[in-house]
Length: 275
Image (cartoon, rainbow, N blue to C red; front, side, top):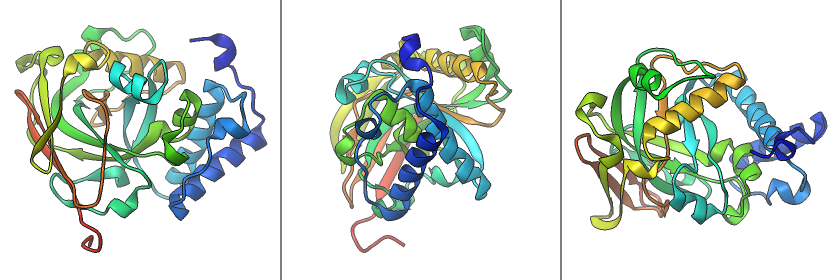
């Protein structure tokens, strides 16, 4: 990572203004122009400062952090969004949706779906210096998952700094209910079939995620560790998508079936049918 790009450049007032603009987009449902258009010098450090401003606002309002996501871990996603490295975001309790439960698409601005192998921690994991062996030992089980990514930036015209500031383009999470032990899986070779309304739309495997979802967990633990943050027991880590993201429309039903893990379904209510 380029040190100059990573260093903070925005003042506190600019960081606060950017965070407020994103929070307002959640409330209004209206995407905003890219933050980097107004702040072309926004660095990675600035972007994470903007993200953390929003996380603080959410937790002050009662949100509970239930895990983290790693984004942009697949080559397909980096090509699709025009960025060159992973990022991370926070998962709050309000982002989780039950498997196959109706989802109100109006909760989101411009949602897309991603199939992922969620990793649930059985013990804390603190970087820096975490190894793959330590990461494996910290995982209690894997679950099939569908992440609903979303962007508060209009038309998904994002740079790396834009998506980091926007909580790594997080939206929602649907977890399956079939836990699988890691010693029963070959994560890089774990295949996935993604269906939309019964039609196959994409396929992928765990190796698309930095070679293995475990590598994404190692990256996350070490990057957070540099910031003094420990991954907690019971937390969910979404390590990244095994396919490119697929747009969501009201009425769509997506199912991701993972070899050896099971399936998970995200059912988006048709217009006017959301409860």
